[in-house]
Structures are given as structure tokens and as C-alpha cells.
Image 1 (cartoon, helix red, strand yellow):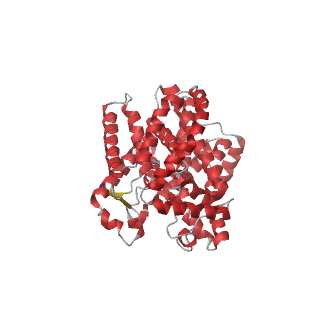
Image 2 (image 1 turned 90 degrees about the horizontal axis):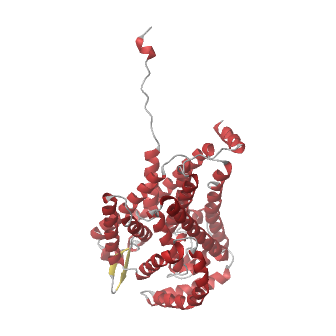
Image 3 (image 1 turned 90 degrees about the vertical axis):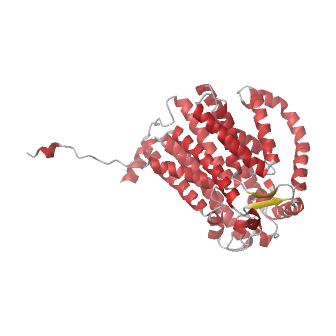
Length: 442
């Protein structure tokens, strides 16, 4: 017998993990609008494709490795929520103002970035290490900041501002005291700055401390360029209030005691914020947009005006040339999605905030320290709460990405703390899942 017949031929095993990490990076990078400076933000389409890839792979792996209840919660619910928002807003706009439904649905495609979060959850629950996902997120934050600085120093901001191409002119803002400013990936910078501060005060090794210091320095430099004072104020307020109300479970009792004072202070705080909002550059136009938004809201109060598109009548054609719902806060949400949209937005906002708070407490209890990215996201969402009326950012690409990612990471850390030995511990597969899996496989 040939001696070679008993030898085992070497096998080449290919791992899909590097592809999944690359997809996480691209989905986060594009979702936080890191590609807005390239080719009219065409990179966002790649980010959407990567988010859908993560979700599809996670759904397939979860079908065989998770129990049916958990699999259904992280597959059917996201599809129903995201698909429902896109479909209903497209149909509503067509019924209100005519046009093609498919154009309006496609115009709302940034909501597809929300599949990144469920994809990450399902992949981590079926074997992908959560710690490596968080390293990819840190890398994405660094890339977003360096990407911004590169274009800030290489673009002619004045020429871009006066460009006849709106995809270029929209990259730059101008006012008398701050000059020309390139729009940054603001939400990513907020989370990165806050997470780096938390990391700096932990004993994680010299390399990580130097990395945190570098990220803080770069973020602070970008802040000196854009000078978003209200954003900085809400971030500082969130950090100050954290040890008083949110650092321990029993601190909620104190929060309940001061709730009446907060309610009394809300009208005065809102008045100050609105005054600053209206007195800023472009405040007169913004005031007119508010009036128009409220006026059209009364025409369609339940489901709003719907989602417009670039291939038919837009909001600027229907309402006014200066009207952009994203500029007028929660009134813009009410205009586009009606009372139903506002209630859904507020519900999702506070559900994410509560999930982050619970996960933060779980990490403190299990690890005796906060998780830097989770803590940064918690502070980010708290800051967003203070500015909820004027800046409902979770309805747009950066906020959709941040909110989806935050909910997934928080859920994973809660599962990790409950399991004790990692989030990838497989839940028992019930008979219904087995039947479904066998049917699909066959």
C-alpha cells in the first residue's frame, strides 16, 4: 500500500471573522458620516451594505445557535420597526403629495444603518468576541477623527461653501465669529471624547492611556474648530449629574425627589435654549421654518407629511425653499412622522437610555469599573435627553448608528454579566428552532 495513502492532506480553513470586523468598521465609519467628504457621501451606501451583511450573517448563525424567542426578538422586531418606518413614511408622502412610493422609501434608506446593532448582537451571541468588536469601534473613532482633520486641512472651505454643487456646499458652515467650518462627525466625537475620559482614569496599561490622551487631544482640537457650545454644555451637565443620579441604583430615589423641581425648571430652561437657538446665525429663517412646520403638522397630525425624495416634489417645493425638518428639532419629527412618530421616537430614546444605564450598573457590579464605550454612550444619550426638543438626532444617520450600536452593546454586556462566562454562551435551542433550522437547511 502506498505510504502516502495514510497521510492526512493539509486543509486550508478560511475564517469569516476578518470580513465581519471589516464590515463593523465600515458600517460604523459610514454611519457616523465619515464618508460625507467623498463622492457625495456614496460611502454611506457601502456602510448600509455592511450593516445588512452583519445582520444577515447574524440571523443565519443565530437560527442554529439561539433559542427561538431571542432569535425572533433580534430579527423580526428590527425588521418590523425599520421596515415599518421606511414603508409607512414613503406611502404617507405619496398619499399626501403624490409621487412614487419607491423613491420615498429609498430616500429613507439611512434607517437601514440601524441593522448594524442587531447584527453585532447576534454575531456576538453566536461566537464573535465582544472585546474585539469594541476594539474595532475604538479604531473607527480614531479613523473618523483623523479623516475629519485630513479634509479640514486639505479642503478649500471657502470655495466649498460657495460651490454650486449642494453636496459640496452642505459640508461647510459659516458665521461671522467662527468663520468657515467643516461639518464634523459630531456624535462619534462626543462618544469618543467621553469614552476616552473614562478610559484615562482606569488602570488599563500605559499604551491605552496614551491612546486615550491622544483621542482626547484630537477631539478637543476639533471642538476648538467647531465650537458647538450647547453640545459641550449638555455633555458637561451629563457628566456632572452622573455621580449624583445615575452611578448607583439607589440614586434613582434622589432623582425622583428632585423631579418636581426639574419640571418647574423645564419652561425656563426651554425658553433659554430656544432664545439661544433662535438668536444664533440663521435664527430668523429657523423661526419661519418652525412656523411652517407647525402649520403643516396640523394638516397631517397623525402620521405627518411622510418622507420626500430627490426625484419628485421635496419639502422645499411643498413648504418653502428654506424648510428642512432636520433644522427644527422635534417639530421636524412631528412634521415628517406626526404624533405617532414623535411618541415612537421618545419611546425608543428612553428605552436606549434605560438599557445603557442598566448595562453600566451591571459592568460596575461585575468588573468593578465602568466600560468606557458604554459609559461614553450613556453620557451621550443623557446629553441628547437635555437637548431632545431641539436636536432629535436619533432620527438621522449619525444618531441611528449611535442608538443602534448603543442598544446592542448594552444588551450584550447585560447578558455577559448574567452569564458570567461571556456573551457567546449558547442559549438552549428549543424544538421550534430546530424544526425551523432543519427546514431552512433542507
